Picture (cartoon, helix red, strand yellow):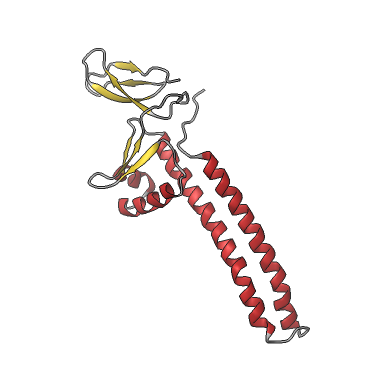
Length: 185
């Protein structure tokens, strides 16, 4: 059974999911509460000049609901990108490669990725901008028992250098020999 590799920072994802729930609940409660005031004005049991007040008091609740929806949207997008990152074989995912998989222009894709990276949703990978925009999965670190990072391996047959995910096997890019990456603990 293969363990699925993930580059999501689960601590931050969980924190933002909880935040989105709280925002949604508070927003809904606020709007339900003030909608009774709006109903009272419409019903005629409250003065008409309160109508604008109740509507104004509903705006923060609507804003909280909108923030909740946005948080959930960014978490969903981060999970989509994580799926692409976890399937990568060489540790470098170009903007064109991601754009093809998601059906997006690479410029729009990098605007999204920049926002997701700024939110701290990813770990053990970096966003490289400039001439060849891409996401680089960082090298395996000590304690990387899940195989999140990549290691630079030298082929024992031809001496060529190849990046291989830690704790896995790969093929030499030049001669095709099987190379086993050592366990990183």
